[in-house]
Length: 329
Image (cartoon, rainbow, N blue to C red):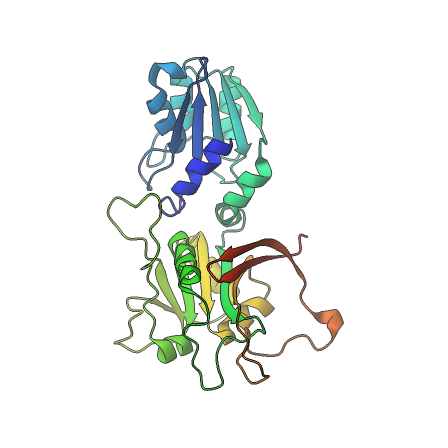
């Protein structure tokens, strides 16, 4: 399953809105054959691994991070491929909450006499597939809020200058987040002030898409000038929750919110952020007049402050990438 997780990680940027899944066939002789899901409309991980195994798949054990599908969409059912290959046992990380799957694949395999085990390395698989699982369960995108600040919490100098607080490796990692996201959202004020292109320029994933682009859809809250670099973009306004419902219905599995501080504050106070990614530079503004991470009213009393949980701290170049999640319900 560890190898299946690694295989899935390599295709993280190309499979959406389908899940990024990895599979490993272990033959009766102990040979290992890997597969990972390709772009929408192409083979799923199980099929690729079985094709690699060929005749060695008969009597084998198949490890797969997500429950195999049992329906015909743009590809045929993976359960049929598994049964046709003569696989004896299937080990699954997590069940697929998609209504078109939802346990059907597991039942089909068991009904056909295949030994099925579910829940192996489930925590690791659920973490890797968090965006997909959230989208299928709620209909909304997994919302990642990306921020960058000095150690004392400043995001821009009093004169408005902010480029660059973090080091080049941190910016490359930020472009990785863009490449993993289906859409990136900023406020119209950020567009007018910085005129960003919001493309994936600096990150090259292990597996590139066949044709197409890694650049996410650009979403702007408000109206933007006709000559803005962010165009073509989707201009939206209104209730943030309703916007998430609309984006989720259009196949946006992961939404990256990049700001500015007003937009970040709105998403935070509305409780709509699933993961906070904060790049912290070893720098100090040294005063109380730098712009902060959020605009708007915060907690009035210490008892009212938002408390999450650290889920990752990693050094990226000269900076730290700190990941926070809301407290589990």
